[in-house]
Image (cartoon, rainbow, N blue to C red; front, side, top):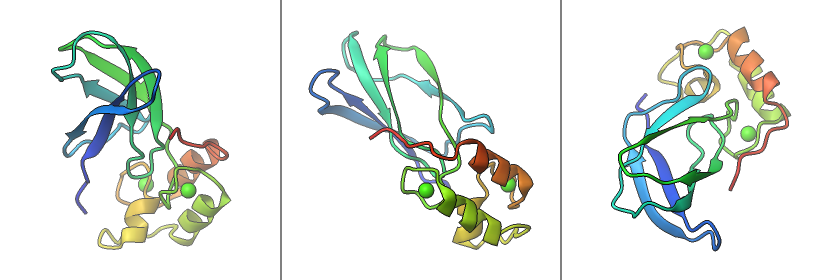
Length: 139
Ligand SMILES: [Ca+2]
Ligand SMILES: [Ca+2]
């Protein structure tokens, strides 16, 4: 199954308005949820808010950055949101439990429940979901 592009928004730090959007195609955080974002934009150097939209099973995240052109930023995203509602809760755990041992890569449910992207739904996926239980993504 293909990855959809990850979407990043620049927001005004005070008003929260979206100033600019860009997408990082074919991109996924590592198993620890680390994402290194290349910062390319024509925006002038300033303090701004970056918003990473919920991506696959990773929760949305808003961070304040001192913007400098040409830099890159390391962000850690929380993982475990199987159903994509930007919250990790018991429902996500239940969906993953139902798919345990499943490795049918054509199934969208299996694809979603495989939160560590190793092609199979197993205990390590459940552990990631359990660890982040109760986490809510930023809007
Ligand atoms: Ca969820
Ligand atoms: Ca897995």
